[in-house]
Length: 397
Image (cartoon, rainbow, N blue to C red):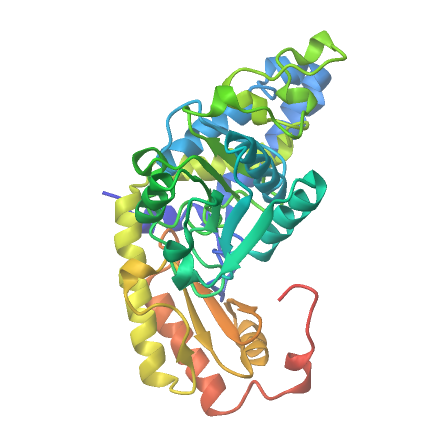
């Protein structure tokens, strides 16, 4: 049984802060500071370039990929880390489209993370083969899956409201129509159990700096079903995706298995920090995390609605239809969130009017939830948000 008091103790949480933004950036694992310092001193400092072999830097993307695979229901050898999430979206989509050469539609929804749509639109323009990015409302996705669709590309959990797509049902329908699926797990991995293999997902991508707590700029991951991996040719034919990088061949030959989805040099310092977060996850039962997340989310919604009637729930009321975040709407949402942060309760804001709160059981308690709502209610009851400095938009909201 997961001990959430023990997991909380493994994170650095600043005194006086209630952190409700782990869905955007997870807090610092306490072990990361020492681990990264040791890596810099004993590995980079003493081994220098020999660390690529002696310290295992070169093999780490696959080793860490296997650790993430356990959290997303993937088979060993089907996940690798590196690069950014946008790069991985591009890679996965570019690999999927040639598997359906007679189709031209990429189907997505308006709840998808915008940069996923940007990457898809950019790829369509680059290919110049008549592909179409078709975007529908989230509720219309199932009905929009037709025999025209090459790839269904969705973020499983809406980044604003936490609305959750039914991966199993939509993947099954896509396959019935001969389409492939590409799932963005940015707000899924570490939030609840994911079953990529069991649902038959074809491709998936995600980041490691949110619920997985890998730190700012932590590398992304990509999953390719073992049914497809040896059939695809990477559009980004990177040096480290080559079959033999240090043969320095002038012609590209794709590496074996998931290694062919590697592109650039592994981010060694970031991987060291991520490993300390995964050490925590190794002791965690995701089913227990999910149950705890639902309980805390239900408590949060209930108390906000009781004490803050000016806010309107933006997230689905049914917890089965939510991820691990809760959104509330208010016309002055940005200023309210700034006032809340100034009082030590950190959430974030998503345009046009959503106050977003991550419910992360590894380090949040019922007391945190109740105290956060009391502070929010005080801000609303006394119009404490109505100050000029709270209305100035920062670069990151």
